[in-house]
Length: 71
Image (tube, rainbow, N blue to C red):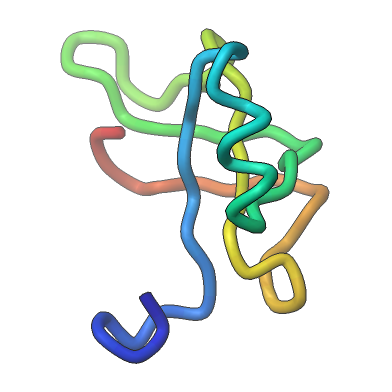
């Protein structure tokens, strides 16, 4: 991701059954809040599944992330 898309970290949402796979690939749980825009609802907290970040050395693990758009 860093070389191809010039980003510092990735954010993903996964079903609980996929957690072990993403952890083996280096993703770590994000223990904060994630906000997105939803049509007809405006800005909402995305909490239907657990967020994970990739590149944990540079990625935030706590706090609040706002995607400022659709998920």
